[in-house]
Amino acid sequence: MCPPQMRIVIFISWLLFYVSFLLVMRKMWTGKYVRSPLARSLFMNMETETETETPGYEAQQWYRCNPDLLGESVRSVFVQSRLDEETLAFLQKSEEKSSWLFTQLYHSLFSTIFSPIVSRTSINGFLGRGSMFVFSKDQFQRLLQIEPEWKGRRMLDLGAGDGGVTEVMGCHFNEVFTTEVSTPMKWHLQRKSYSLLGVDEWHRTGFQFDLISCLNLLDRCDEPLQLLRDIKKSLVPGTGRLILAAVVPFQPYVETGGSWVRPKEHIKLEGKSWEDQVTQLHSDVFLKMGFELEAVTRLPYLCEGDMYRDYYMLDDAVFVLKPQEE
Image (cartoon, rainbow, N blue to C red; front, side):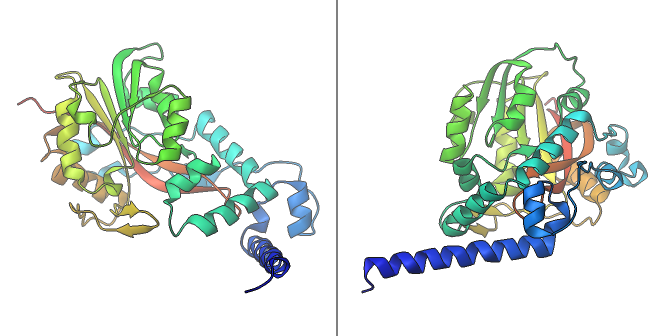
């Protein structure tokens, strides 16, 4: 066995190598995006920039849709969204955090060590990072067709994560309930005073909700069709609504520990474009599950970045659905 001093030397050497490797990779791939003058001096040896770049033409494309390619019943309820101040503020905050050099190094080291045995969601929960952004308050109100002062009785946010998106919706409700699998994320929700329900019990509580949100969960759960059945039964008859976001292209996988597996119930969409898949989700999934479409829009699903990217973006389709009368 190696003496303790030798093990310490080996560990420090490995750590220095790891940090050096990350610095080199960041310089190769993302040096042009670094905002911090200190980080820029370490990576790029170039003049300090004084202005923060803001998303331009590329960001506007996140909202682009050709309504003519949507099915007729979807086209009639399509809502055009645009980059707004709240979304821009999230992007700028993510850019600032990505340039915190030593914080990002610590996050990267922690993730590398624990990712084989701990889910990415739980790692983000431990580190207090990886916050998501789906819609702003104004975008949410436009989709639900409600005024800023409108209040409902009870809502449920399924798979709420750290509660960041829950806050956008929760201000409109007297009672806010959440579910979450990740224990570290549950701690965040409890600190924000949200009521937690079990992921297998929420639909057995006897509660009925004015709004249930299912944001980017349909492609990450084992039984998405059963989930939709349970949601339908748990909405207030007549007035209850489901707001559902789905990443397009739709690629369902379930995270188990540090690995990904196919779900038991596999929803397969044939369409290639955003418009095709949105139309097919409506006709082949939501209608068959007994839901009527009230509104749909295209939004970017944003996540805080890391050493390599300021932020990450996926294409989202956000639907407002109500149960069909039986």
